Length: 191
Ligand SMILES: Cc1cc2nc3c(=O)[nH]c(=O)nc-3n(C[C@H](O)[C@H](O)[C@H](O)COP(=O)(O)O)c2cc1C
Image 1 (tube, rainbow, N blue to C red):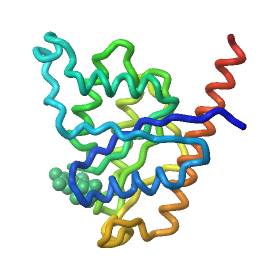
Image 2: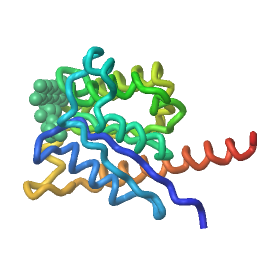
Image 3: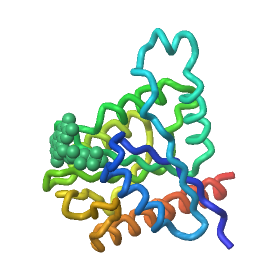
Image 4: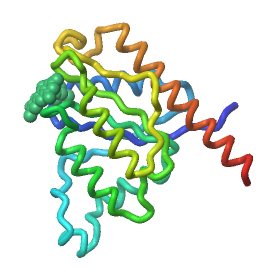
């Protein structure tokens, strides 16, 4: 039996019927056996302000850091707003990036997103990949999961209806878990 894997996820859309949230649920349902995933809710975090930080990080943000540090890998799901990731996700990243230990460092990260346009969050995801360079995260390169024309891939009752997207999400989950297992094996090797 291989060791269980823990993931921590963020969803960059706060909309109740969010396609990105449905895609995150579909990703979770397709993860390899033995993998658990916890979504960190970020909708009620304050806007980043160094003066608030100077009084101590808000409890919710400290709890998020702990969940991330306990996790073996991270999942960032973003809509595309004006060719970039959503402000709510960027705000969460900005808060977490100021913490010690900085909880993105060294973590394998899966990225995906759904948008109305045909490029399906490609531009937003490449911005996130750039941000992850500074944060020293380990983004999974492939498969890229860019869910374009999202309105055609989900049903009115909140289900993913597009099999090709479901397969990509499953492949991304498998790839993330493989990256995590390789990283763990390498860490054992250098001990
Ligand atoms: C402020 C704003 C900016 C947007 N900019 C883009 C964009 O740059 N590219 C795109 O494909 N869709 C854009 N959209 C449409 C979103 O992709 C669409 O609303 C999508 O459903 C949002 O994800 P959600 O369903 O998870 O909330 C934008 C929507 C909003 C509200």
